[in-house]
Each structure stands twice: as C-alpha cells, then as structure tokens.
Picture 1 (cartoon, one colour):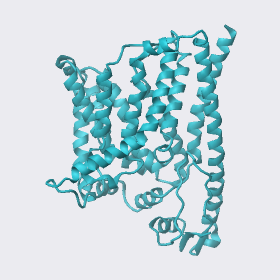
Picture 2: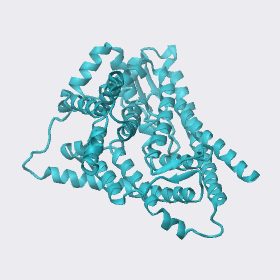
Picture 3: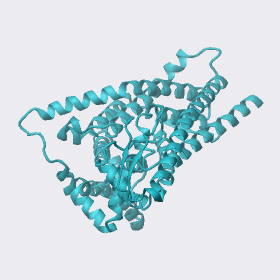
Picture 4: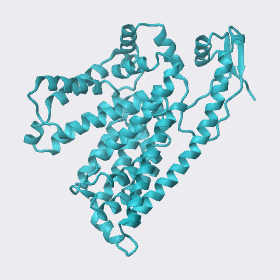
Length: 448
C-alpha cells in the first residue's frame, strides 16, 4: 500500500513538472519574423483602422487580430504571451482528452491518464509546436483558435436549450468569436454540426443550444466573407478544368504523408490508456464508441478542414496549415483502441500485467519524457543566450543609424521555441523592419 501511494505521489509530481516546464518554455521566446512586421504595422495605425484594414485587405480573422494587437503592443510582452500560449496548449490537450469515452472517478489517479495523453500530444505534435505554440504570431493564429474550438464543441455536445436571454447572448457572442478565428476551424465545426444532424435523432438535435449554433454560423459568414480573403486569392483554378481534382489528390497525399507516423504513436498511446483503464477503478470506459461513426467523423473533419486548399492549390500548404488534419486523424487513431478494450485486455492478460505494473510503466515514461524535455531546455537556453547578446548589439548607442552586421545564430537541432534568423540581405523586408524598430541604418547577418 505504501509503494502504491508513493507511485501516486511521484506521478502527480512529474505531471506538474511537465506542465510547469511547458509553460516556462514560453519565457525563452523571442520576436521572430512576422512579429517585427506586425509590431511595426500596429505601431503606426490606430486600433480601429488596423482591424478595418485587416478585414478588407487580408483576412476575416477579427478576433485573432485583436488579440495580436494587444499582444504586440510591446516586443517585451512576447515572452509572457508565449508562456500563456504554452498554458493554452496544456488546456487544449486536457479538453480534447475529455472527448475520449472515459469517465474519471478518482481525482488523484487521473494524473496517470492525463500524463500519457499530454505526452502523446507533445510527441506527435512536436514538429508543429515551435510555430503553433511558442511563437506569438503563429500561436495566436492556431493554438488559441483550436482551444476555443474544442471548448465550443464541448458546449455543443453538453449545453441544452436556454431561456435565459443574458446567457443566450453570452453564448452567442462566444460562438461568434470562435467563428471568426480560423477558416479551417470553421470547416471542421460546420462538418461536425452537419454530421451530428445526420446521425443524431432529430428530437435530440433540436435540444441543442441554438444560440451556440447561430452565433458560430454568423461568425463564420463574417470571417469567410471578408474582402481580404478574396484579395489574397489573386488567381484560382477554373471550374471547367481538372485542377480541383489535382488539388484534392495533392493535398490528400500531403495529409497522409504527414500523418501515418504520428498515427502509429497515437494508436500505441491509446493501447496504453486502455490497459490502464481496464486495470483500475479510477477511470472507466463510459460507453463503447461506434467505430464506424468515430472513423467517419474524424476522417471527414480532417479532409474537410482542407477545403480552402482544394480551391487555392497545394502550393499554399505549410506545416501550420497541415496541423488540423494531422491532429484530427491522429486523435482518431488514439480512440480506436477504446473500441477494442475487451480484446486488448485479454491479449495482455498475464500475471505481470497488473495495476501497479501499468502505473509504474506510465511513471517511467513520464520521467523519461521529462529528461528529454530537459535536453530541449538546454538547446533553448543556448539559443536564448545568443539572442540576448544580439539584443545588446541592437540597443548599443554606438550602432544608432549605422550599418550593423551581426553574427548568425547557431541553432543545435530542434528547439520547441520558434526561431528564424534574419537574412544576409539588408533589403529583406524583416531586416528592414528590425532596422526601423531599433533605429539602425541597416542590419544583416554575416555570411560565414
């Protein structure tokens, strides 16, 4: 009994260490790329004019741009905003885990399951994390919207009709904001609403909160109908040719190529979760998922999220835009073992397989993961020290209105914090913006 209590205490400690380290990573962030561009842009325009020009000239993501404006009021805010984005990532993984068909009964033992889910998300989203979490411009455009979208989905499946007008207005406003965050998220949520309407009993669907649905649809219309979206699409494929089919095939290939390894990781994680669930009373499988509906829902949502790129073409794809389908497909594979939980339990039914063994395995994985995070921390701290030295060069009074040549940053492999160095060409647009911000004549990176 004492050994079991010790392992519970260790699991809780490791879980909070992992969460704490993910949040603290944000404080090592630095202004990068578009951060300089947007900071300069926001500094030279009023708040209202900035929102209007963005809506008519670039994008309908109104809520994102408001948050970006507040976050980039000063470049000194960036580490703090990045830490908040790290917190959003942890919250996002927690909310998403609630969509698995499980019921958590004992609070202290919940840390085992949450730990393995959090580690899984970090591992399979690892290539996306620098640009989608620990970068202010990318994080506000991606991790914040998907956190809000998962909260919206939780409300969609649980909230019923309300006659309280104040509550209805609040729900409508929240849903409207979610609808204006990101076009790909809009596609996913619309697909899930339609899917639920088709598969759910009509009477049950009518009990859904209409303020939630109407607010979302209204926000999506405002966002997608923004003139800035059409301004960005200077050219598009003709309806009569086969370019739409080509785009669909190219995008589909990119999705599958980017997903299959991550899907394997999530499937293995799902098996570990099921092994834990069937051997402990702290977490129980609430209901057996319908495998057909589970597969169709997430596969359809994944490919439907790429609708804008079927029109614009696969050349517009980037690692950030692939995040949504990769996440949806990988999460789908995480849930499949829950359907086969009884068969999995029989396969692993051995004398050595008991509650203590599976808990000890999870704790060992958490400790190993934390050690790997410490390695990432070393690389991030090394990067941060170099950036501090560069900042001193930029702020040196002797360099005012001078041509400044800086040494390139030496980056040792992967770091969770996003960084992209300046160009060796002083006329590069980011280099010019950096020179304006720090009152330099020009700045460029020395070519070694």
